[in-house]
Amino acid sequence: MLEEVDREFLRKLAEWTSNGIPVSSLYVDVDGRKYPRKQDYMTRAQQLGDQLRHQAEALDRESKISVGKDSERMLDFLQRLDRGPNRGVAMFSCSSEGLWEQVVVPRPLKERAALAKHPYVMPLEALVETYERFCTIIVDREKARFFLVRMGRIAEQTDLADDVPGQHDQGGWSQARYQRHIEDHVGRHFKHVGDVLLTLFKVRGFDHLILAGPEEVLPEFERGLHDYLKRRLVARTNLSMVATPAEVLERSLAVEERLEAERERKVLERLRAEVGARRQAVMGLEPVLTALNDGRVDTLVIPFGLSLPGKRCTSCGRLAAQGGRCATCGGALEDVPDVVEGALEAALLQSSRVETLTLIDEGKALEIGALLRF
Image (cartoon, rainbow, N blue to C red; front, top):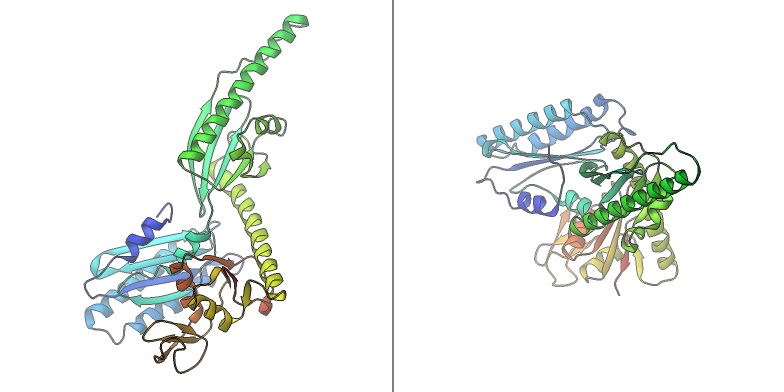
């Protein structure tokens, strides 16, 4: 299973071609909060597999056989899946040409069954654009462990141990002097750990830092950190030096979800404030599509799962909520079953940021919106 989804993987996947046999792409929501039992999401997955086979009915015999095998393999993978903390699965298959890739992520994915010449990777591209990398470090007075966490995957980068003398049992002046000797070694250890952490940041990069360890240790260690690292510190927690990677991942994902919820609230508050003040923001399908067509969108804000029909110009690709003729070139407008998907694609092509609201639940109060560049 793929360890990390990045732009290079998505680029290679999107460029894959299949000598005329269609590629099956299947996105399934396996969120345990909505589907506590495996059979709950398997029922929906079987319906999506049926959609793939239905889309292949008009194709030649070889394509239909290939798509049928794709669907079987995807359902078999889901049946055997241990989803753990993950909430979304994407699968790409072309059995006749040997393509098989699966991606499991701790965020829900909008369900979709698609047949095309290339793998349909747009939802994952949006995910990569918004996911951030976390570094969690466990530190005590002698050792340290470093973990990088991104998209629900965890990798231990290195561990570190310094020779710190043990406690001396002699009293009096000698004991005080030896204690200072110990503290000097502890200070050097903390500096060593901080230097390694700074190098890790410069070489691998991460957006947020979580400090873990004994409560009495963390303040002293934190004081010596470089400002680059202090600015990325988002949480302090208690974890044992012998914590398993699974325990570290669980704690890190809890912090990530809290930060994501805060970010979503702030984006939504800013969007509504700007719209209310008639400044650099719009809400509603038609105004957002107009802003995208004009290249004015800085951040596209989409409630998770939103799907709306719309129009696309057959000549220039302009998106619209309705109408018969393109406002730009006068070309004919064709029906698009999900114009929100087209808006997402347009935003990514314009290097706009995308904020998908997955953790805020306000029901029908949420609609598509955009913060504008000008």
